[in-house]
Image 1 (cartoon, rainbow, N blue to C red):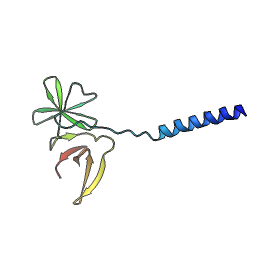
Image 2 (image 1 turned 180 degrees about the horizontal axis):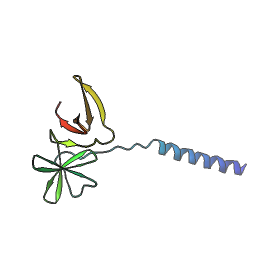
Image 3 (image 1 turned 30 degrees about the horizontal axis):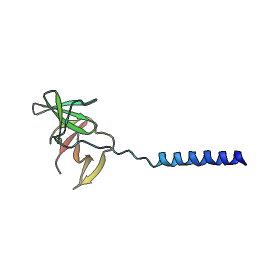
Image 4 (image 1 turned 60 degrees about the vertical axis):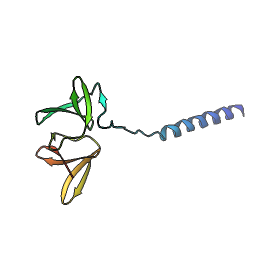
Length: 116
């Protein structure tokens, strides 16, 4: 009888742990425009109208000295690929792609930021 109680307690504990892990959700928080960061990991440098922009994980940055400032995506800038999680949308007969509020249009082998 005592062994049965121990087994029951262990199963109840394991069940509680599994349900806690199943309820976890990951929410990505993207920085607001104007936020200053000191490091950007794995950023692609893209030159647009004689200015360097850094693109990492769907966020656009401008350099300010040795720091990076989060900025809006410059219209007309071209990227080779879009981050995972982008959505294809048909709008006014055009196929556009949206990611974190930025709209892209397929052009050649890459994508260009457009306004909608």
